[in-house]
Image (cartoon, rainbow, N blue to C red; front, side, top):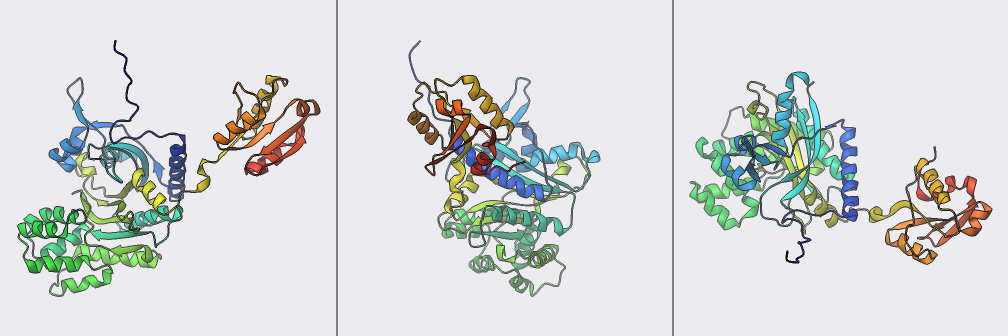
Length: 446
């Protein structure tokens, strides 16, 4: 057999997470879970593999073929590795609908795989936070979901200068196309696909695409003027010739009134270009955008969907609203705005130094005592027992506190607590050092 080295690189579009990266990830997931706990959202999860059909039914066979990892198993069943969680949660709700008490407030943090070109903010495997409410038709649920999105951003110390929640409504979008721009109903979906790509293509290409769909110069100008409206109060002038009752406009009017009432107006604005690419959205749609010129893009988004549960259970009539956001865009945002705490990699554990003339059983007893008092610790296990080598090991592990019990301390029943960052140490009696150590480490006393 030829000698060769296997590649140390992960598969294209996937990532390795070393301990430093995991500390960051665990931190931001703890922040997220803390916010969702306050809103009393319950965590769920599902399988990595789902039937290919549930994605094809929602997004179309061609799209799913291109964007998923899919295959036939040994029993010739067509499967796909999950590219998103919404069909999974819809399936789960439909499966136990009669046993569940509505409304449901659920969330998940799941890893997803999509076969697409890796680029900034987008990889093939990513972890996504999904937050959904099922069973509430009132716009109060839309308000709660948007409030959670804002509170998540604020929990990371982001303020209104850093992000903006851009809101639209799919019903209203269709009303504008058909009533104002006179787009035939049969062409609304085609036009929506073009508008969804607006921010990703050149303005001339966007214009040409619209004109290929039947827009004239005047209509293109009128559409672009609608994109400029950010205050929803300016929408009424679009319908000066219409006396019809327009459900989409009514929903947006009510939602923005609620947003203003609860003090979220500074974080939110109307944006007609936000429609979200998925066809299953039926009402409110929104995106949270980074305002930094370095990272000007949608961080995450979501909206209302009324028909997904019915894919699995006909006549169920259960509405849902939610959003999902990935770990890649979140980290980009936090790094862009310097919102990741500098001390995340600081190791709060203690290194117990080891000396040859002290029984090792003593260090084991000391370690157990620290564990029982909620203090993480490791016993030095290097071959070189010089104190300088042990201190160097602690520094490389970002451990700032050492417990030193050498010959003298052992014989006099003392403990030497060495604080490497502060370059100082204190000696205490063996039977009363724990409270002082807890103060140093910031651990609450019982």
